[in-house]
Length: 386
Ligand SMILES: NC(=O)CC[C@H](N)C(=O)O
Image (cartoon, rainbow, N blue to C red; front, side, top):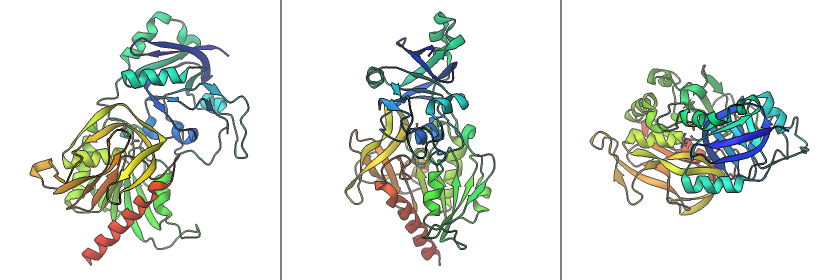
């Protein structure tokens, strides 16, 4: 095994072994605390341009299967683990994770004290980093400069780099899992880095989903005759998503029911006129406690976000955009670890969103009810219109 070095933007370095492809990877280094679900993490497009550290020490134990990926490829910019499995073991396993990373040209590093690294990132905040192995190690004195020259995540507009080029349709399913001829509702889902499980969760409820590229216009959205519009998760800084925010305002102006997840929540926040800000080290894992303030229930949820909406936690508040043109808004969900806004609900418009992942890939299914809430919102809206 050849040597590899992890260099952080602040000059701290860790030495380990090459894992996956030998070479160089640059990105923002973030940590994920999930004990399971490494395939879903690796293939989540929201991790585009991020080097992911797994805090679970044993990674790759169940190998790589062809069922769990959330998209057609691995998106993480680099991968940091402590102790990779020497022998993967699972009935679904087709390949080893090491081989899969190499085949998809993802540079990783193993043998790292991921606990020390994570504590460092918690203290200092997430930052840029680089993984270097093989020939990339030759100019040792240049490594820090390369890391410091890499683009930062603040201000990055990345949805267009991960979105589908062409629109496609995910067909509705009946209770037995067989295709349904007549959908119960039609949704236009704007792909800002969508995970495959999300349209599937809608299709399972009988919804036909038109997945549209991030460049979609309001006319593209309306051409699908949607009962509702959905904005997905995605990479990058929500403050940079000008086109998407304008599109969302066009949707809100037409009072089309709206649901957003993660990036979609941040964009609803911005469309309503709130700010967004970068968290110190974000939420990435599958066991974050969130309270749904409508019911008072606490749910254990899957997260992957580095930015958050800046909205007042208490009471309802007039949406700041354009003199309050979108009426009142409440923070519907809050993270119980740190009081970060985890959901928004417009009181005078059919629109809501959550910062976390009800599609639960990977993660607990506690929040699946949010897809039912979206369907209810579309049904109520149709009745209101009839
Ligand atoms: N999973 C997501 O949609 C992430 C949203 C955004 N890129 C963030 O880091 O907060």
